[in-house]
Length: 516
Figure 1 (cartoon, rainbow, N blue to C red):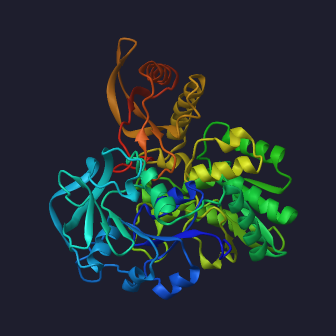
Figure 2: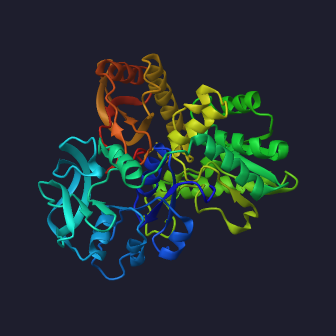
Figure 3: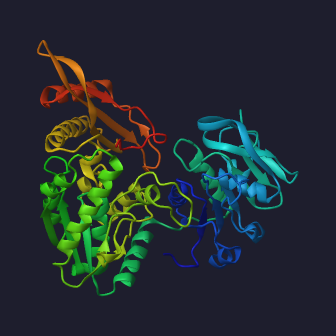
């Protein structure tokens, strides 16, 4: 992925949902980062010559049997180490500190006081806010340690070893909920690891193109298109690498938004000189989804049917050997454990871990370890249209997971019309680019209303709008009340079957962005 002589930081994955988010924060500071299994040996690390090592968080407790551990000789390498949450507890334990369950757990935003002006906290406020998520913590430190910060319930919120280059933070500096977290990571990279920051996004494009050429050689690649930025950037990267050896397949599953299928076809015909196959499979998907309520089952059905249709169409493309997908890292870490880490599955994605062996293709996934904002940067670098690059994310299973309950043609029409109004008004208000994702959800309930002096008993629409850069954490968006009022009024008046609109004000975590 990158030349061995370039500076980089290794992230040892202990099963954290945020492991790749740590990597992203490192890359934001123009330092290449690579996630590796926590089982990597000290000898293997030494051969890669990293500038620093970060130990990720994880769901386990360090004191239980079979808890994930790393090679203790890592400490002896002399390479700066930053332990985050579980990583701090493990590093401290290896250095003879005591870790125990806490009497009072800490989850969410917490006031933190910096009591040591170390390199790690350079330029930080003495009183800051951090994001905690732990039920264990360090309760006793050997004399070789220094305390760097504390909270009301955590006396060792950050620590430093006096003779080893080990730092630990109990909180999560990688999430946006820790406002000065990026500064902490920057301090670790530049003040402690001595990084120069010579890695840029353009470098990623160059290496990705080189990797694609090396993998594909003179073979033909088939790319599944959704019309979103992920698949578009995937297609653009592959086209840059292999030119007309790329064929694209777009499957209209009937679960798209208003006029989306037509727009996808036009966009790709106008902006790409590739072999495009468009398949109308609307009736086929709706038939398979009859009577299905469980959201995970919906995803499985949609994913399976997509693969079957894709296989059928791909057989018509001669010499096709490779399948390209716009898989992003949030999809990966919510679906399957990565890098050997014991990550908990949140939800499955049809493009992750669900491809049958008989598909007969080798996967090409150039975006697999990127986040949405990084993909957009690549899209801009490649000269893709602004409208395409900045289009709000749309899930692979489409509107099926924004309909809570059974998917029918009538319910799809209701949701499409409501969602269209939401996006129209957000655009009119000039908020589309500032909101990371905004959409309507059809709830599985009816409520009593009064319309035209008559009793109504109709459906409820929920509006979801979030602010985020990485889609691993998200805050609900403070849309002005007058805009929400316009949206609600239009939906109730213009969409037959709706008499109530509600607004979702939950964060991720504990909620997800999509409802399902």
